Length: 482
Image 1 (tube, rainbow, N blue to C red):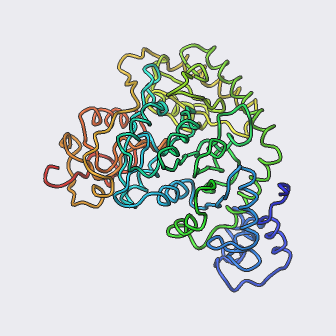
Image 2 (cartoon, rainbow, N blue to C red; image 1 turned 90 degrees about the horizontal axis):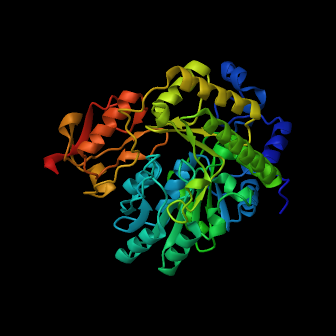
């Protein structure tokens, strides 16, 4: 196929030239009804914010330009089929899970998944079988899934329908995806990949293996993160063992019927850009990240980690574009460095947690911004660094699952003060966002260690989300002491 084409974008350009009089939605009528919006976004943008119509196809049942864009995306990513998603990768992940499991069926997965996976389990009623990842003692972060642990979970749960893998984790850590895919297929299971942070894997041979190359059956790819499309746009990829018609039906259960053509065209243009220039661009990003790591490690105290973590199993590979940095030897929690970089130096990084920060590098970054980041981090150490005494360094806590996520979420519950919840079963989510990995998910027992983590994270300024009580002074737990 001709990857220089961008059929949705080209159809929009042709439509703009037609000067069609709009008696359809959206109601701003190409910006005339909302001049402030038109001024903010610009005439080109509001003119392209249009409704589905014959010349522009329909995302729910594409037959022309959207279908062509999906075929081009499938070829670019080496998939049997690609679906354009406008509800973020959350929507892609949930459609992926809902396509393969239903109420009462089992899915094998690591516990350090994004909240979207847990949300899918609440929606469909599937039963999670967790492969608890090892934790790196220095970094305090969860690692990948050991193949032996996946094999044990499969052996103990031969009726499971699928295995889900993070490829990579938020920190850049990859499991042995090829081996896990082979294990799943050998036991009649599908293999799913959450590739929210792995878009670039498809476009450079020196990066970790992509889900489609490894033979996975479905993959959720966050094009807006490292691929350059607009926020909230994503792809859902499928392999040859999955029915695209069934997946489309699942997607249409929850995805909007009023798809944004701004998002769709951004996916189309971003795919074209990556297909034509992705190898060159991500090669440059890798060089930039390697340079940044060397400079940050030379400051002292910080540890910008990379492929030296690889051990052939729980850290099978590492995404070198991820500028993940441990901050504890500087005497600061990651979230404290995150806040200082923003408040003191006007630098917005992706996230800070209890012991680490992540500066997200992609095709839009330039050396001078990296120099500014390195300089600011050196200043943070000089001005604010202290002893690491008293810092919590464990990011991951093994869960105690008492009830399925769906049963717990919909069961009768009561709200209790945080201090009175130890030993009770949580009925809601609690997480720091980003990265959006639940500290607690519905159906898990609240332990004193988890309560210490929540208090510490709040004290350090982590953005806590999920509970009904926005201040997290109370938690919803199952009634009756369960």
